[in-house]
Image (cartoon, rainbow over all chains, first blue to last red; front, side, top):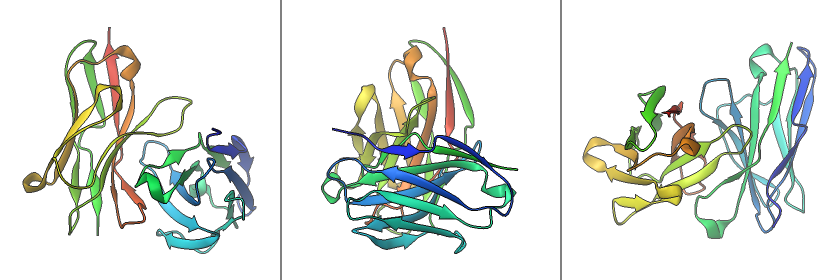
Length: 113
Length: 113
């Protein structure tokens, strides 16, 4: 069983640029959630996708957007990067049958200069 | 609005000693509660969860947690810690039945030899 994989693991961007982060969910999981974890803080919920539709969103501006594909993999896109977007971005997949258990990838560390 | 508070940023415990990590939540209804562990270089892993029923829940790696509605708490315990337990521990509450999680800021556990 393949776990959740995220790419890239690290990247550096400059303010105003755009970034795309990718996530392959665990086999059999149809729900993907994205979280932002700033240094020294707990994760913050960005949004969730279920069967290719957005299924809930946290308190993040519209420049944070996402996609889920038919194979349940997902992308997180951030436009017009700001310095405060520097963080670890975590992807988690889950299945309705595993009642709240999220399986996390190791994250993509984004640094905005 | 839901919130989670972990009052201790760091806790240092001797190997073999008992452990209790505190978690308080704010939520209007019966919460879905979780403890996750984040080890260096690894993704977040679910230790245990509480949805309903028995207020003492058992998890992996010898951890347990007790839900106390009167105190709005969900403290994590382990009778004897091992050096491999050194990690950061996060308490979380689901904001709805889609398991979109609100997280505490985490408690870093340091093990003294």
